Image 1 (cartoon, rainbow, N blue to C red):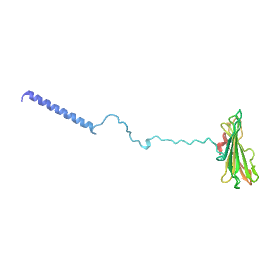
Image 2: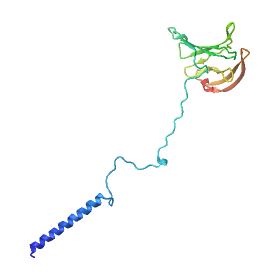
Image 3: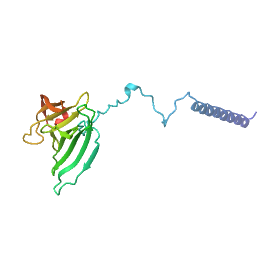
Image 4: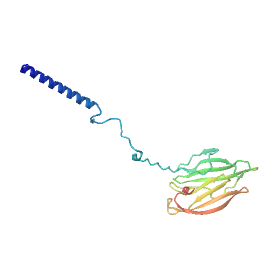
Length: 211
């Protein structure tokens, strides 16, 4: 065998070895035997519950509408105000048997505007009698409402028996100056509404907070 033949055989052997090495490297890269480089898209590492951000529940917002306990009105009528935005604005009529005689009595709530942010609700309580409706409303059965605070509010109660709660406070310096409130309770006895209890409450701006 001459030298040229021996050189060709050597080159062929080297080429075969290189191809074998390349094949082994390709196999290892495609298998799990070697680490893979790069970033996986679309998957996340599992997160334990203790590592997840806590969601703090929101506190329920306080209702801004005061409930005077009268429920749904039987009838409602709106009236035009004068050029200054004052006058009788609305009248709501409610039917409740307040003395348990089987007849629907009448409670009327009238909203009166005075052309400012202040207004009043005036209440009238009438018994349904053989001779027609009889007014038995106690004195000062109205609210005193400001833009931010109310000085006097009224709530009606029908169970287990009819009663009325009035919470009021005196005006001092400004509408938003807190003062000590008083809770007065009324009940119907023999077709007459009596003042049966009075309690001193805390100092507040809006008496609606005390119901």
